[in-house]
Image (cartoon, rainbow, N blue to C red; front, side):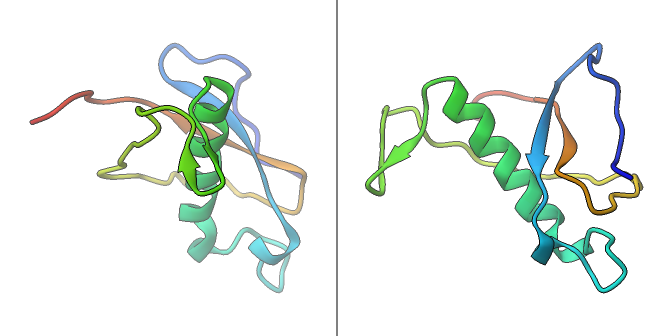
Length: 96
């Protein structure tokens, strides 16, 4: 069984994030300590497809940096499966 979200959403973006064996606990459920890792994988995959990545520990563009101020996790059971849907939504963009 895998987590399911709709393929399209009214806001944000769904990034299908790889889930590895070591992300699971003994029962085969995504361990809560790995949620942040999945968010990081989703953000990196999203920006890499849009031309912003790192090569040789250097950014490929000057705008390759981002910061996540806050993230929130809903209770979607994630069991062993190839990809976990991660819904990303930009609440605010720019300096304070």
